[in-house]
Length: 141
Image (cartoon, rainbow, N blue to C red; front, side, top):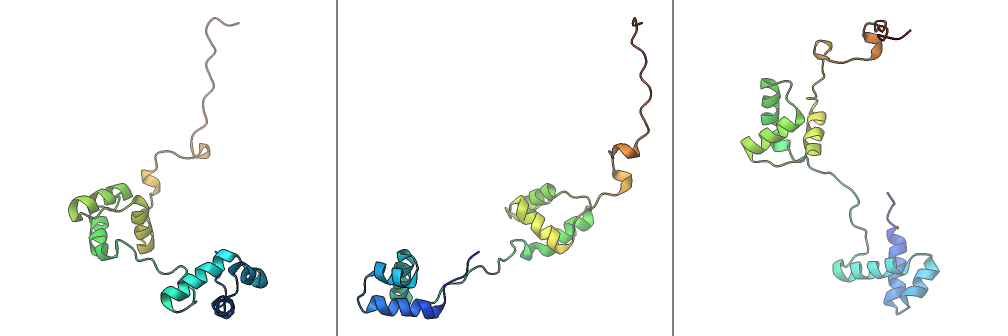
């Protein structure tokens, strides 16, 4: 992600535009795009400042208010799937969230469920017995 231009540059560009210089000539002088000059001018007229807006920031987790409910669900049913949790949130709480939001919340809370060896149904070929020899096909010599 790119960084915003400095306020000093923005103020120098705006000062020239306010003095009546053409947008394209100011843009060429400072090696910036004409659209940047126009946007900074609009921003100045709208807010009185050329300072850039916030880039990025904190994104509030959607399930933060339902932390106790989610923990209770996992305590009652440790092997609850994320799809199952998503369905319970909708049915019991009326909260409609995406699978990704459920995964993020469970992961950040450290509630992920790991399968153990007893429940494992399949494994790598190294963990199985060797295949027996094939019986000869009947009628072949």
